[in-house]
Amino acid sequence: MYKICQILLILKLSSTGSKSSLIRFHLFNWALKDEKRICMLINSAEKKELSFGVWGIDPSLNMALSYANTEGLIDKNNTGYVLTDKGSEFLSKFKIVELFKDETKVLSSIGKKITEKMIMDVAQRWKNEI
Image 1: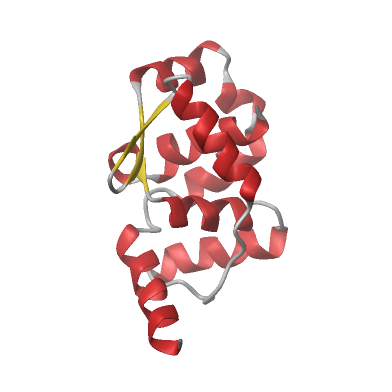
Image 2: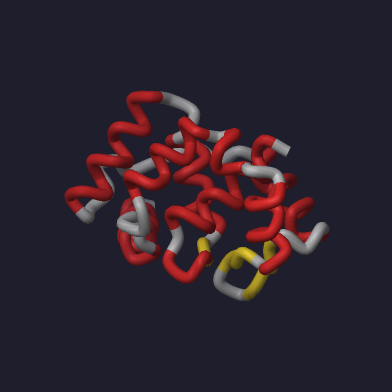
């Protein structure tokens, strides 16, 4: 449930059109685990360029995305995931923003500044290095 709440908050507070790709979710998930990484993500948002080139992939995030999709809180499409009305209602009904004050503060400060293009630029560098 913790991961699902994070997913919904990322979509609501830090995703243009309440949409995100899988790799972008993994970036946020990885960054939210460590204060230094959070600072790097905030700094990247301000500079409009990611200040790090790699981040971890967490299988538990994939499971949470699958479960949230199954429950109708998010929809999966060919570019990633999108917040549903049911997901927005879940955030409101259970006061997730108030319960996850630290995450809400961080995600609100980042806003929608970490774009899919920024993520794709890093992914392209990965391809070029292989």
